[in-house]
Length: 213
Image 1 (cartoon, helix red, strand yellow):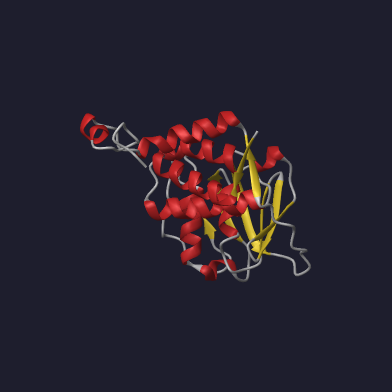
Image 2: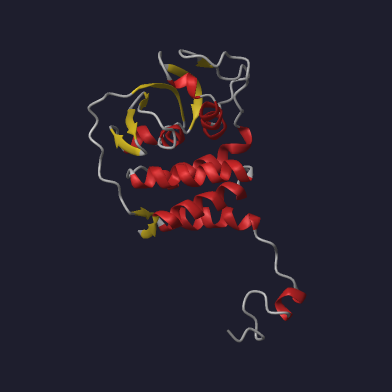
């Protein structure tokens, strides 16, 4: 296993997200979510790899539903899944949806990322789906599921008010990542790199023979 600091987790996740085609703003969100998930001991890396693979086929939530407590974010009628990143960003822009009655989200892909988003919201919430449940408060995640539940490819998610007696768990300062997953995420991140040219190398880019530092 490879050990990463939380800063390294955030940077790798943001770069891989950009390589997968997300906008810079959403990449910043993904980096922060990955950091929160890693601090909570949740499998951010394999979930990010799956998200990057599936992102071209995922749908953005529409604005046709009322931004009120107790709303339902409906899945697309064509059978595709909602993008968890765009869905999380939409909820973040409408905090009233998180007050009062539970918010139900139909058929969202890789729901673990909604737990990451919940850690960025200044609210106490419970995020749950079949086989997984997490209480989130103050940016800390108290997880209540096994690996199979966290890595669900899609699920119907409920976000409700969290209990008042949640004990804030100890946050990890480092995260372990499988070397194969690390290399795969690095390869996705590398899609954003500018290819080297003979001229750039001759003038010192990348540490050529003219680099005397």
